[in-house]
Length: 338
Image (tube, rainbow, N blue to C red):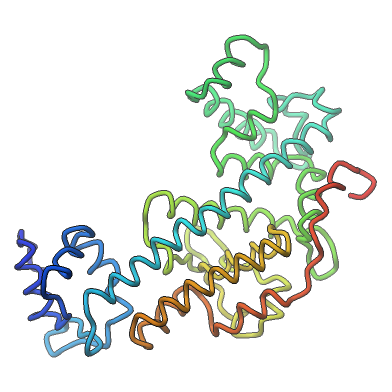
């Protein structure tokens, strides 16, 4: 049975870090770090990169010279990473919702078949699947407190497709997309270049990438650690990493690793962001990494880099260099192109 945790003053916490963990923590500046961040958030949350082994009692030992400042550096990196990724995820989420809503109406007689009609969805999906999707969407709309949703609820016979696609939860949106007619998902695949080895639309990659974006977005929104976020292959029915053309181009070390992590997000962004935006994203991300590298022990940095899923920092430059067609947004409404 583990020993119960009792209240410790900030000074006692500092003494515990010095004496029990041999982490440098002394003086007013170090105390301020503990006061502002909290012991659990900064120590329990960001000690792992600095663990060097265990002592004779089974307790963690840490890299010599580790200080509370270095733990704070990892925390600040993670805080920055969280807001940085969220900015791009929400941009992609909004864009895919908007495009899918447009194509949904277009392939349903320009909106003549409403979204709450099962005929608006793929004939390959079961009636129960379609009913569940419609029910979940309507339930979320009815609970919405947004002014424009209430207005349409009170003053119109039906809520437009674009409002439904905008308001429903991200997970429900993905399910609506999955159950929609193939023209909807295929149009997104063709726009973003989401294709399999034979050049066919890779709907699995589209749905799987959006699910991972959703998972990371939720972790960011709930202020959870992000740099070490992972989903193991086979957990809760998930197949894990989707091995597509960019992973294959990066080499076997990536295609053999079937667990999803933040690096998967970087690969998915390669599809969803225009080339110029993606190059800027990778450049800014690399600057964040190099800044962290300058502030912590090399072994600690290697741990963080590994948890993100990056084998070598040079792979970020390789990701930028891998060929990609420009996203032709202006052709999205031309059905003959798709």
